[in-house]
Image (tube, helix red, strand yellow):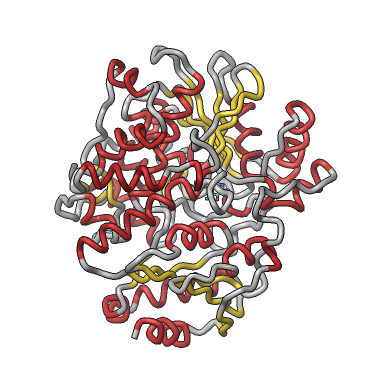
Length: 469
Ligand SMILES: *Cc1c(COP(=O)(O)O)cnc(C)c1O
């Protein structure tokens, strides 16, 4: 399997060649040169596989430059009951006939990002050792991504993590989750400012090519192809959990932000998994819903981006969306390049009057928007009807999913975080706060390790340089 750029300006590369880079050199996103198609007979042989075996079948189609035995070992080490709470790894809970909840949040940071990030940690460590290289991961976080990256990379050889967060602006739980890590390769930088200040510093450091090369600075953001690949697995797993034969179709509803999770569902569908609808749910930040309803893709400015009670979906532009448009154009890189010329200059594009808009229904994606009142009502309703607590993001998915899905098809709603992470909204919805899983009760009392500093790029660079020297 070789990888291309969505903008056509990269010679084909192998998986391990694209793994540690971010964007392709031409500014596009990396994408496999084709999607391996799994025919019905083969799909049926996967039905009874356990999670690691299924993961190997899927990932080995995308990763063919790591010896099979090594890849299998990395996968087996990642997807364990010890890390994900059960042998099923991603259990499916049936709420009602044709209504299911796919649990993706039983990893160490209680959000679905662990599903891919835990694999990435093991994969990075392996590939860096092979290449005899080191990597210093630099990132900015307002919550979920940062902690997921830290828990995936803690204690890994050849890797350090420098994670910037706005000092005093994260919840006590999120702060404690990150700052209680005592691993020597994890550095929490509490920046005196807001999240945008953190992100600006990361951008400034990444734009300094000399510094970036000298200190081997990298990222683990959501455009990393390995993260997408690892998220394909649970679409197959859930399909097998709710069907009896590969003649049946299912629909998924996906709380969406950067279009990473639902894009993995799209790939599963392109591989031949019988998915009828992929239902995309946004919160008040409805960039993606606007596109799928009208054909207009208009990224927002930071100032236009609203702070909501499903904060991990508060995005202004959807970083993985370019990959979908690449497929929509029939993999026409020149056309993608042209469309993103406007986007990269802060503009937009409108496909409604083009030939592409007619093709959109071939992809099964429908969309809708949720808001605070709807999400609180959904949490309350699901609790009353099914005695099950869901978090705010999952509630957006359920709200939109129940409204848009065709009744004769099983609907699988992706749970993307545990309710305990958003205790205030749960309190508002049902009048009590959720219980924490075992081991998380005294989290805020643990000693915390972090470095407080002003929002100053030079000081951050100096700090990084000092740790590496
Ligand atoms: C990241 C995240 C999302 C959005 O996923 P994308 O892949 O960015 O679309 C939804 N819910 C939670 C809890 C998240 O952490």
